[in-house]
Length: 377
Image (cartoon, rainbow, N blue to C red; front, side, top):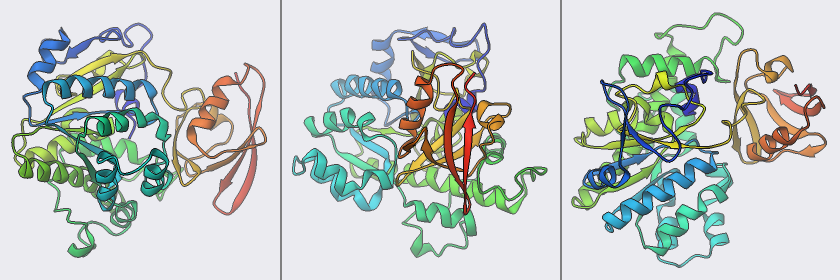
């Protein structure tokens, strides 16, 4: 889930102004307050769990994560690092990597990185190398995508306990989380009423979508809690998409239900975010990063890559993508004559296109292949 979607569109005067790049800010009822990095990190290093948010395709976010991890590890050499990106069955591969038993190429091949995650591995490798060099235990936090899809289709209760990969019944979601997920759900390809009136919060399909999101939240929270039980004195730092953290609705909520109410969650703050969203409950602290526009901003889409398929998961109303005929659920296969294999490739190609010169696309829509043209402004 993209944090930009939670924070709304940037305002022309206030975007980013409340969190200058390179600055830590704590949201509070009295307004955001700047805090010295050393003082904040000294305090945070005493927490049992620290969750570092990210937009998965942002190099700036991952650079911030690495710098924060380095600062925390200097204070707490015994910490372990949890990864949303990796399903639990691949924990032995992480163990081999940390032990120095796998070369980089073999490590990524053993993980089958494009299949389990899809985002550019180069964004994560500096963090993974740091963990290996410092012998930091790595934790696989996630479940298989097939299980998430099954819960989305059938519901959590319909999946036999033995097929849930050990995930317990999640704590009930808050009303605020339901409202947030409902806004997200309206732009997903599995919404059964595209182009019609959006069903309400009690719609069975939406409730199954909520259960699939909470499955992720609970799985990650349980894996973190299990590590804390095994090593009660050692903190757990985890890399998790900001949408699972913002507002404390997702993973922090499930951690509280598991008795880890002292968990802190930290979010990178892009210079395009609207300061009106910097509310007290958003995060324990945020850090200002100067980064390129969010994924697909010029095009107006949210993209995900799975096994070399670049899928459109959201289309912004009134955007270039919508005007050009792109829809949620489309798979972009060709841009300007070149085969598309990653969202990053597509983003860079769109960003480099001269103003006013059209781009050609080929998309798969169900069983149909459609040629489209992007009239670049």
